[in-house]
Length: 237
Image 1 (cartoon, one colour):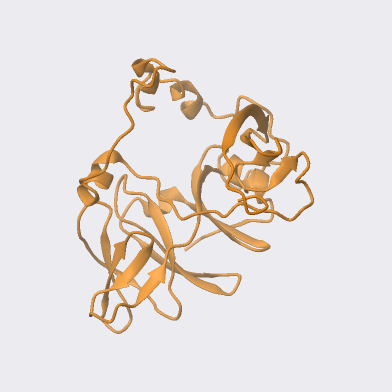
Image 2 (tube, one colour):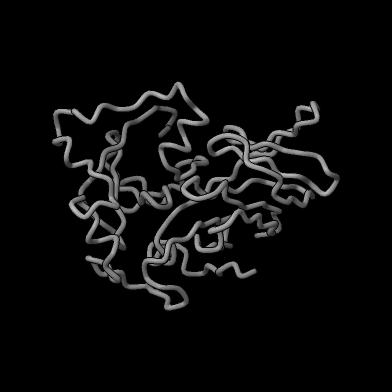
């Protein structure tokens, strides 16, 4: 919403720090896709920010197991041929070569050698504090109870391909209990109470109706996260 009006966004074709800039169709301001703030145009300096919504980068089999009624956009869009959507793991896909190159195609001025350029990370940012969690930490079913900027969070993966998620944990300390279906996971708190991941929330399973909200996050290459959050630290067990 801009000045109370719902607006549409499009992709500009421009990059900033190797990340796409989008534009709104109301003012034609260019926006940082990564942080949701104006980059160039009349809205720069207004303090307007786009709300970042919780999301999970996952695989189709895990998603559809939890949401069997999901509808899917037809590959026959009339804009790109169907073979343009070849899975990235296949060597004839559009981004296969880029994914497996060590460096970026376009220059990125601010870099850090603390992790490999294209190591994949899960990122959280609250105010002036940011933290990157290397996805390699989540090769197994691991639960991380952490605190960032005074906010208690729990970060975990439902298993291979199911994605990493973060939730507010308040004063709870969670451990992994069991997988349910698809991306769904059951965690157990310090009192032995089970909680199940639902859409955008952890739901307490004792009938109390208590929930803990999912936190907006980013899945990124390390160079991309660092380019926008150079003050970040890296989680280490």
